[in-house]
Image (cartoon, rainbow over all chains, first blue to last red; front, side, top):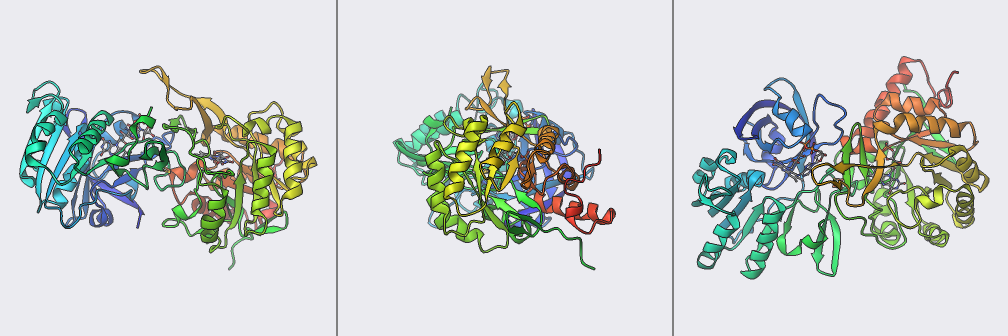
Length: 264
Length: 304
Ligand SMILES: Cc1cc2nc3c(=O)[nH]c(=O)nc-3n(C[C@H](O)[C@H](O)[C@H](O)COP(=O)(O)OP(=O)(O)OC[C@H]3O[C@@H](n4cnc5c(N)ncnc54)[C@H](O)[C@@H]3O)c2cc1C
Ligand SMILES: Cc1cc2nc3c(=O)[nH]c(=O)nc-3n(C[C@H](O)[C@H](O)[C@H](O)COP(=O)(O)O)c2cc1C
Ligand code: FES
């Protein structure tokens, strides 16, 4: 069940260029969230910023009842969030919202593919399914924007890194590295999150190599509970699709069902 | 001790309290049931319905503007048959009254929908002649008093339930339009729908909304909405459901003082799922603090 939670800020630190990690006390979410789900945050202090901001859950600590969020400062809301100090005020959140990634019992190995702030939700996936054989492919713009690589190394069997400028790991897009390994390793399931250009390539790869792939979509949101029909994405097959809601039908979808052509 | 009397009557139907969910901001009600006891909401106006299922506009469909939002959903809905067979029975398990918000491309379509709603448990029909986000029908019906008269009259002839006509603020004179609706037999008037607006991304030089324009709602439009409700209240003798930027109980009191019998909460539902219950609680607190034991003592109580 979704709840509204008033959540004290435990920590809020910069972990990479323009990227922050906030730890919140939210035991209900810590015990009930699945990877890929998000919380919908009311931005405090500025009541003219009406809409909540959706941020995925990055990690949980069930014993301490805390959750981590990793977010990039891109506009007014995230900029305000980045300035909040621990115990300064409590955040108003809704969650856990949306449908997360689904990993069936018989799956023994997993590929995680993330780009930029899309790496964040995959860390919770690595945490939850750490008993499986996980290979992570993480792409960043450059070294100063990379984060949580050690966490992935602790949780995964193998971690590949790439940056656009080669300042960390291999130079180039992370999907190029993935293609190099796919024929030989034949993954059973890919979980992806990142910019739309990356998700489009993942969809193609999944179809070409016949590997099931689940991707997490982003769209501007209102209510976050399926009530306002603003967070639409085209889902179905070519010539027969519908606008579904990213907030309640997603944000995670089977990549084969996502019709990117209908995306402006 | 009992609290103040909050129940109001609109065209012979009693609402437990004057708080209504504004169409398009509260889905079909059930989506919010984790957060809201739907029995406590006076009435719910469901997402705008069309004769056939409708895909709606491409994304992005929403943008935040100072103290407001622009939306361009374009009436995405599963169609009136799906609503009658699937959503209505679920909603009818609750005490809340159900308002079917209908949208046609032609007068004939509006009438076909009203006919389909005959012998259903829908409590009111709300004629949306004010949607700014569709290319055919919608707001084009709502801006011309003659058209308002014709469509209202035609639907009134074939609808079984009380008829609410929802007005657009994008007109020269709201009083003229309200008068036309009343003359044609409307049982109540709801207003305002959204104000047409736009937003531009200065980096890409493109409109933020794929539809280019959208409808503005939220606190940014409250003063305009309040003024229009007040004007209409002085023009017609039928009840008014006032809306536009209501976020708090105090906002609701303002609309009621201006002449609204009931008030609808829209954008606030997107900000907080419990918005309507919060508004209701604050309204009750206001009444208690001012020793008002019946909501009717407030309706149209503006002192000039
Ligand atoms: C399901 C989901 C999960 C997300 N998880 C994360 C995460 O873990 N880490 C992270 O850094 N970002 C994440 N995002 C993106 C994040 O929501 C936006 O970066 C954020 O809302 C920007 O807010 P702002 O006020 O700083 O930006 P502004 O540009 O000032 O925001 C204006 C409006 O646009 C919306 N908006 C702007 N960019 C986006 C976007 N990319 N997606 C959706 N809405 C947007 C805002 O919510 C706000 O309503 C996620 C988005 C979705 C849909
Ligand atoms: C996302 C969204 C969708 C809407 N959809 C409809 C609709 O389908 N039918 C309708 O009559 N009004 C629709 N409206 C208008 C609202 O019902 C209401 O008239 C308007 O938003 C003003 O109230 P507010 O400022 O409280 O939101 C919609 C508004 C929003 C924000
Ligand atoms: S954000 Fe309201 S339906 Fe998805």
